[in-house]
Length: 237
Image (cartoon, rainbow, N blue to C red; front, side):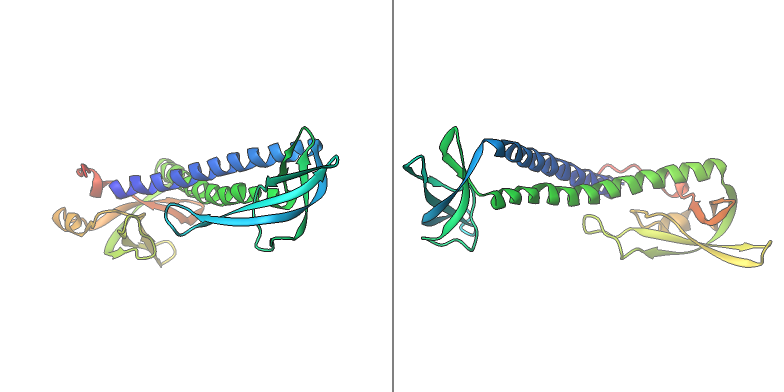
């Protein structure tokens, strides 16, 4: 189904974006950290704070200029970032590159580079978790169909899964019931998500029961075989 492919693509995109952010953020941060041995701490004075708007006219970008003394010579350079606590005339702790005194920075602002791997890690966890869940569910389904006990449960109804949505669409689940004569208990099963409404197919094929594969040691582990609902469907959307 198209929605199922889109679902997989979403998890892959999340994981890819997360990986890119983590790699870029860590590279920039590590490069700055290892270059600290070549940087000299000093005190500078903010001489000018200017700003300009980006192309969309919504984001304000700041430029901060700082004056400082190196070996008796005064320099004025643009800082590598901005803080809301900055104002013209304020003295701040900065560093300069001893091989290039016009290059300056603030260590506390350098730490902001960790935001990138932090955000990336969130995306990576979300995407990676989604991918792992899909893989584990597929493996579990294969294992149950190969080694599980098969029973036949009566079809009860089709329900809309409103707790989950992809591309603006909700999936369907079928509900089945099985009366276990060994313990005189009634068991209800819910299928995995189905991205088409199966009611017309069930009615057309007059399906009364579905095979259910159950783990012999844990009845909570099961899978309803719904291949009969999708075997003749070719999604060309």
